[in-house]
Length: 395
Image 1 (tube, rainbow, N blue to C red):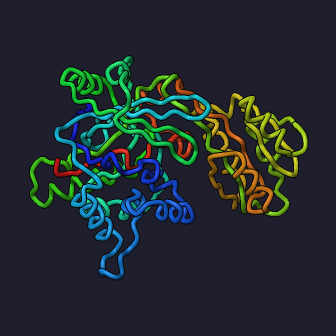
Image 2 (cartoon, rainbow, N blue to C red; image 1 turned 90 degrees about the vertical axis):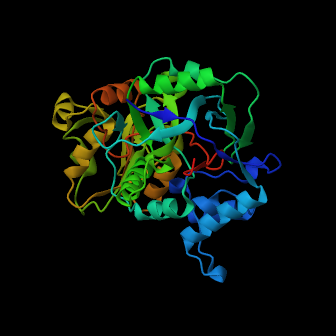
Image 3 (tube, helix red, strand yellow; image 1 turned 30 degrees about the horizontal axis):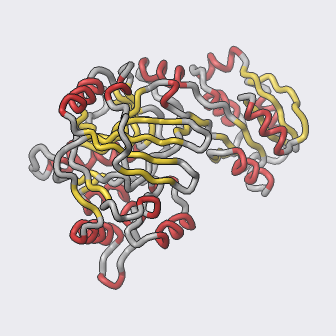
């Protein structure tokens, strides 16, 4: 059963303007965005989440991050909470959607236990995060876990004003509550222990935590903070999650290949009209699966044999079947329609596919079956911000 425990977090001192020091997780920050965040405040979390070398002091990126975190602690810029706690965390978007979960220390398990990967992962260099973990000895941003325990949210739903609050550049309000009441702490721990936890976001950080734990064990270290990873756990429920699609663009399509015909092997294709922003927005709004190619939009309906061939009920699986049939074609992923259209119009891509969001019900079915979805099937949003709370491993 998953083991989920409170920890004494490291948080920004109350006088520090939280709006100016929080940052998105490292893997969604572009170089230009990093520069903006770094200039916003000398203690912005991006300085440790995505560090740069300190040539003047002869420090590489990772040693520079560790030094900064130590300096912030010594100066009182960040302060350690007096006792272990869970941290209820709520994100409210300008559109009014709300996601509420709880941050704690999730103990790592090898594959085959009750912490389940949600998606197959695209290979990525994990040495960067491992080097940062070694140097800082702290979890700087949480992974995102989905608990299959029905009613878990009741254990951490906050009712008082938040202990900390910040608004990000997208207008999302991030609120944090310290949960240290012993009864509430016990209810959260036991609730999470009842059912498997599915990793929704942060697979590579979880794998890094596993690698670091193994490294510490090999060095003869006993039990300690390295046995767990900071996790934002949310009940897998329709009213607690916002799940978006991840669209595809295709490049490298050989001359003479008819993309619409290639997709027609697995989909019924119906021409919707010339590509324009209004039509694409209407297709997205209606949750239609659509192909953009040859200057036109085509509504796609998967055929029954496509589901059988893919062994899956997911759009991403059937789209992958169609792309596999186009020799030389490569796929790029986009989290929103404007970026997808921009790639198409610039000539960077020759075709695009607008996908439908995976449903919470589908996520639950795949989780209960202990199956991994294909890579880049889901986009959970908004993202928890780095800097709301850090977790030192010397807890």
